[in-house]
Amino acid sequence: MLASRFKALADPTRVAIVNRLAAADEVCVCDFVAALDLAQPTISHHLKVLRDAGLVEASRRGTWAYYRLVPEAVDALRGALSAG
Amino acid sequence: MLASRFKALADPTRVAIVNRLAAADEVCVCDFVAALDLAQPTISHHLKVLRDAGLVEASRRGTWAYYRLVPEAVDALRGALSAG
DNA sequence: TTGATATATTGATGAATATCGATGAAGACC
DNA sequence: GGTCTTCATCGATATTCATCAATATATCAA
Image (cartoon, rainbow over all chains, first blue to last red; front, top):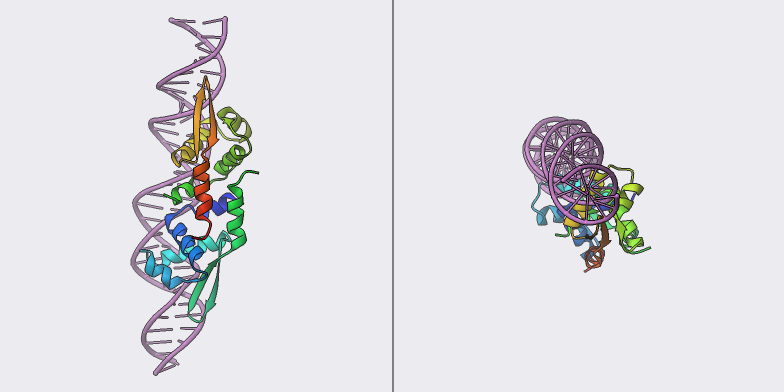
């Protein structure tokens, strides 16, 4: 659905995550934990919400997990805000 | 804030309201009540959420209230989904 | 195998939210 | 004035959500 994707952005922490991902291609989870002032499980929870919404995807390389935006999903949201 | 505007869209009913407003310039509250299958106070509540978020504004003409989108606010959301 | 580090999941709790019925406020019409 | 219609607000309730502590999983190194 569309609202479930907007719902994934209905939180300051998750907007901050998406902003960082829009700026840099890939971001490590550890960077989010360092940058946002929240416990690690909380960050992990927010990343899961964004993953479940299809807005981001993750790849694991060694011990680290890297997240990036899913451009089509972001485009879909942009489109929903346009007339038509 | 930005997330509070996304939060205003984090509900199917409110996405439907915004969709209708994007299609027609102005929509009467009574039309929302007729179209969406919810009680009138519930519609009124959702319209207030959108008003508080600055996404829509209302004008009263006689007994009826007409709602329309605030283009700048919608543009701000679109912009937040773009890089930069 | 043992230990250390990086993420994810689970469980609990307090706060926020969607919904409705009842009520209030304000205009239109007799 | 009195009544009807339209919309907003209030009060109550059930559900959802953000957060953390504790624990689990996974990878690497020694």
